[in-house]
Length: 148
Image 1 (cartoon, one colour):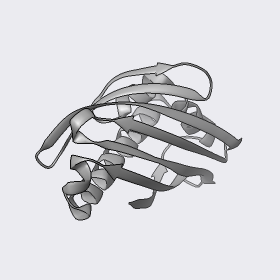
Image 2 (cartoon, helix red, strand yellow):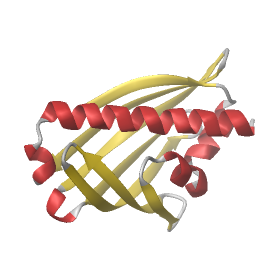
Image 3 (cartoon, one colour):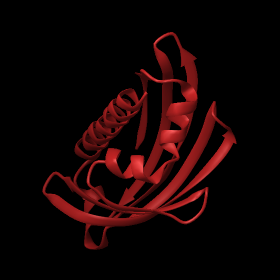
């Protein structure tokens, strides 16, 4: 499954980059996030509850950040396990560009899923993933816009 989108966030690039690396901000912005623990500058652990179609599951996963060229570009990889609901693993490349209205954030993500999630059908899973990503970035935009 591939997701690609962009959003303009009304805040300076450095502020957006810092927010994307702040576990407290991320926990508030990630839909269904119950806990987010930062183990190092590049390693995070999360517990997230999601409902995708008829399947509701608690996922526990790890995310590794790779700050290739901060604050302009970074990538992340992660994997999560939802028990009987299945698993997800993947990664994303994120680019932050200065924009007249603040920061243009672009992402290009890929995920592989298995278990019950994979049986739901790619249209349902992809639609839900796109909706969750949209909600995350809207929450992030609200958070950094309010704090700017």
